[in-house]
Image 1 (cartoon, rainbow, N blue to C red):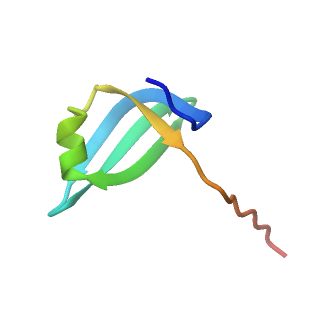
Image 2 (cartoon, rainbow, N blue to C red):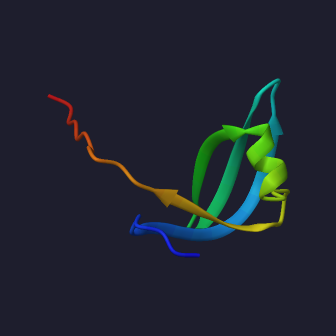
Image 3 (cartoon, rainbow, N blue to C red):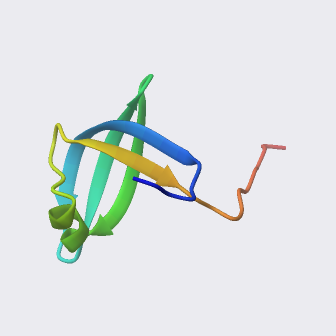
Length: 70
């Protein structure tokens, strides 16, 4: 797998919750961190995602916002 995105976090799928069109996929990337993503049901099927499957959370963003409490 070759991608331009540098933020690739390997983990294990811990939950796939399908809706009418989209699914919520939760990936445990270790250290108590769960990454949650919403993708299409078609993508879930194409990637053969299910609980226990190894997968990558790939994060690519042109902007990252930072906030702090007053």
